[in-house]
Image (cartoon, rainbow, N blue to C red; front, side, top):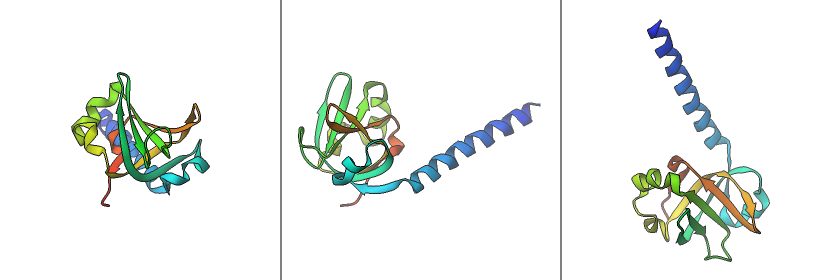
Length: 127
């Protein structure tokens, strides 16, 4: 019985990995300037982090231009800071780096945002 439970756990784990990988591969890849046309959709957005704005509850990674003229802001919440720091170090290390982020674009107070909770959804790219 224990072997069956372990096997079921492995199958569930692998299927989650495959579904996540397929989702990343099927999401449309766009430049950050096109973000306004994709609000409400899950996409892979690519662009340069121009400004890192740390707050007590979150960090904003503003793409292409500084706030308030950013194409969009990637938002990492405090409870996820540790995961992102393990992968990228200090958030300031991302400044002026080209990245691609996978997630759902949202409109908040007339600004486009993409909340990120998993560092696997943020990738450093070669310029």
